[in-house]
Image (cartoon, rainbow, N blue to C red; front, top):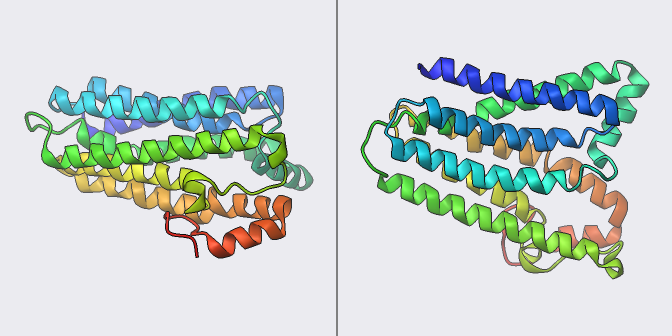
Length: 259
């Protein structure tokens, strides 16, 4: 099966899943589930590529395991939030789009845009599953190490944040323990690091350089679009001066010693 056919199949898988979840959004009035659909579609795409890719089995199995572990965990993490109140980002979009008209059409485009982004981000998976070299190569081991560091960073940050939120005495406060002392968004940094790991694994394959698009695209999304900007606005609204002080002394993204 050619690269292009498999890429289109992966996109179709993501689009179908997001179409089903869009129907859930229409019924429940909550779009939070789109995030779970994004991570679940990436795990599904990686497995699809591993099954039908034309490379050596070791590379295909490696990609499938890495993506299933990381995106399976992220999907479960997001699904825990789905039964609660809709994520503030989507509440704000809903209010804005309802006022302008065409609310559901805009949400349909949002869900399908997530499917397209998932397909674009899957390029390192696609490169890796066509790697014809026998056995795991040095660059892939390095990529696996970078990926593992990212997963551990993301898990640590998420668990610290969950524990902080569960404590009623922290209501209105700003978390500054663990990695949150060194970065205002260590979970996003960990997620981006995993994409660097995927790119390195894909880079070991012929034409693997196309997978470098993924960490670049993910970094742009995190820093300028759907990640940091709306979350910073939300935290400034809810935490006020406490969060401004935290901003002044803490690195935005890369963990660094506090100022």
